[in-house]
Length: 256
Image (cartoon, rainbow, N blue to C red):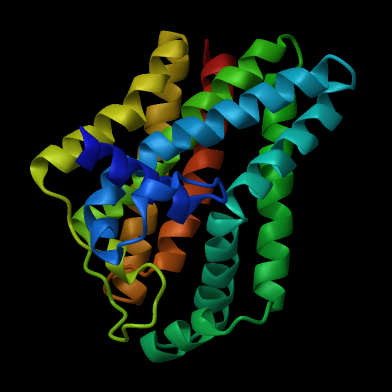
């Protein structure tokens, strides 16, 4: 049990800004198995986002509550995945070959593709959540709670199916870039899928279908452009899968 707690807190400390107990310590060797707990970290982020929204919605209009809850989630994670999405936009948008794409993603400067991509991503997520909250604040909270674990499971699926393509050892996410054993992936899958039980059956189907389509499309793009994934591309996958989950729930509403 202590070993599993160490792995969870390692994942929590790596993927968020939440302080972890001092007894856990820091060991990069734990990052590889700790990736199994990435969807469970999504539970924490999803709960904070949902609780923030419900709290703000008591005092403010739903649109403002959505933006503030998104800000709370970004602050909690230190924009970890958003930064990866921005770098991926710059690299895939501005690079012509693999070496150029990887070099651009390594650059800390923000280009036009990153700025435009992040603006559109945040706007799309905000509008989708606002639409979900038109009739019921609880719908937004449940969508946030379901989307954060599911989108992180999408990133874990890329780790399981694609090779890691950076050769240098300086990449921050390199220790995470190893396939999980069957038990670890099963744990990640359970943590990523279980929160969907809070949704209606049609919403579950819509969220799963949209997230699967987005993940498969990204996997195909990454394999074609780079032959695999990087840490930035995992962040991009999480962001796009999260948006896909919201859109899938909205599509289910319209379909039914």
